[in-house]
Image 1 (cartoon, chains in turn blue, yellow):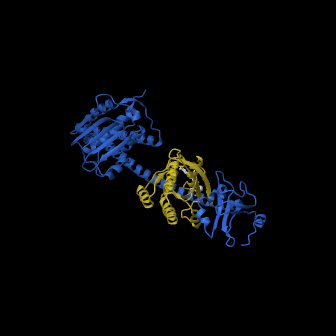
Image 2 (spheres, chains in turn green, red):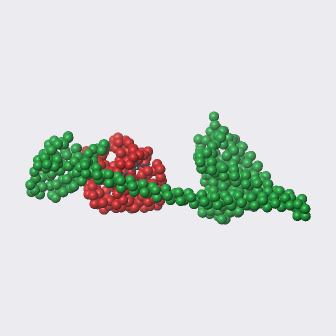
Image 3 (tube, rainbow over the protein chains, first blue to last red):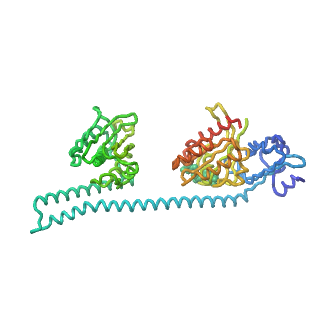
Length: 364
Length: 168
Ligand SMILES: Nc1nc2c(ncn2[C@@H]2O[C@H](COP(=O)(O)OP(=O)(O)OP(=O)(O)O)[C@@H](O)[C@H]2O)c(=O)[nH]1
Ligand SMILES: [Mg+2]
């Protein structure tokens, strides 16, 4: 190789550096900061650390077309290191490549940004489709749940409005009026649930927090549930500590959680067996446990039950629109709590609500 | 003191530059500026509660779903590798397998670790695949966030420690 370092430097602006086998600089041709004979080249060009072995061989020919160093985007350089086969000397050629790299970086940046944006769009499109499907299914369910009680009301009212011969007798009047009343209550409940659900979705469901006593709440709701018609035949037990279990929360919402869980349990046992409500104070936080010994459900059905309007196939088709568990889930989450459900077919169902221990202190 | 070369590999946009800049400079930028070629960072770190100093050059290599010829040349002389994947992607793993295979084939026996990045906004969707990769490459897996700094220093230091203990 007939190397003319000064010519390369003068004509192409290439910095040419000659190195010892221990990577000490012996000659520098051209302008370069912080480098002079006697220096360890790696100090100035840390890119060479790790390459010692590769540079020790007889046929060194290493090209690194685009190197930047340091915290700021210093100007990119191309490095080429070769061993001169005749003299055995090690030569490093360093060229400033800022200009051509600017074009390269535009291309890479455009290509990468475009394909990242495209991937994001595909994801957004899929999410929108899924949301659309969910919304359609939700609307279909709402309509269905509204129709059933509305039919009862319309049918009953039309019979009650009959006159003359076709007028219902007094015992039928009571029956139709009761049906209409119950359907009205069901509709009201459904609308209330829908409002709660949509508020929790938009983040507008606010808690009115105060210092509550879980035991008082449980005692009140359990006694109320024992009087419910669907509780007929079911024993509802409660196991609550003697002293108060303080919790910062929204008493009305906590009652709603408990009411929903107990009424689910009542549906599951269908007037045959027993349900039990327990309050405990664990190191993980205060716990509310509602257990029944009813039919239980498979993991698959449980996943359905957690969805708004999810009515598991196996579950007894009972009153209520199936918004209960979805709402319980959100109310518990709003209280910084956790809802775990343990169930299996024919093994009953246990809902465990664990509240954040930080909420265990009464509010000041 | 010997200076060790660590290479950071993975698809583009997964956060290689962000992880390195979080580790070396403790900074983060939301903006995406693609790396072209290689960017070299020299960093002096201490392990074992300051008792052990380690000097590293970290190679931030231009990202690609498949490691190309140039990447194969860039990893020469590396003592270890970080293979980065992006948890927000549908399937971050194929590009990680590719990079890990390439590194292992070129430099058998050198330690590598896996960074599942952007853990601040996404989580692992297929833990089974992660376990399989960890077993296959006998490596540690870190769920990192360059944005919050979660697990970033821990990961680079764990890699540095394996390199030192192997005496590479
Ligand atoms: N939320 C979040 N964003 C991140 C994280 N890490 C990186 N990003 C963002 O992801 C984008 C890509 O990050 P980079 O670090 O440039 O990715 P890269 O792997 O170096 O990309 P190439 O250089 O093209 O290979 C940037 O917009 C970063 O702000 C993270 O941990 N969390
Ligand atoms: Mg980068």
